[in-house]
Length: 241
Image (cartoon, rainbow, N blue to C red; front, side):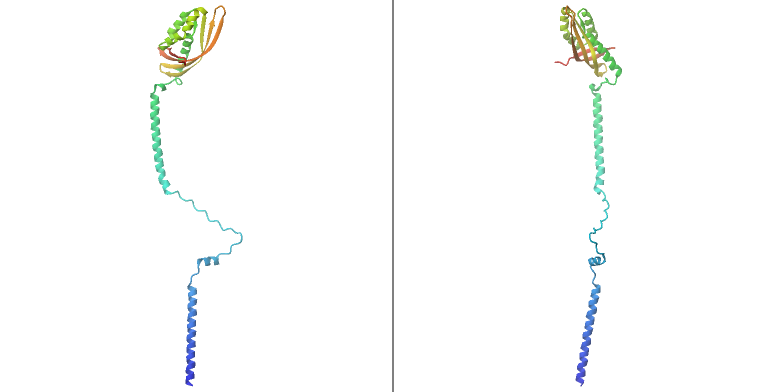
């Protein structure tokens, strides 16, 4: 009888121990599940509302403009310094060039600035050209006086060569040569020296039995010099060799 009771008590103790072990295991598993973190993707998926069909995702806000790289701000003063040096060099070159131009004799031209002197030389040389390039077979002395009055230097010999044939033929053919200046321009005026471009009409008339007149146009340049109050022709340029 006592043996049977002993066996029953032992079975009860074993059943109680098994039940306690089962309870302990279940409690540990539950605690582990509660401590395990939930993945962020799962939280976002769980908390985010489902997207509607055909709805585009919201546009991201525009990014702020980026600041200029610091190296550009550092390079700008260097560029300005280089430009300043170049401008200074150019100004020095321009000043030197202008000084050299002012020093050249060919640049001392007052034909456009000295209106009074320009008008004076133009009027006197126009008169001189008409006198020395006109010839009348009946009064050759008049032509000689004109040559002595208006010609100097190289122009004296040039004038003799140019009118040599007229002088030779004038008594026989009774020639009258008339030169009229139609236009003149002062090309250079430098103090008491000048150069003028002359345009003239010439008529050559034979006054013999059968009077005949021929006409021609002439263009040439003269160098003039001022002697006292009178401008004289110093050289004649017919633009031919």
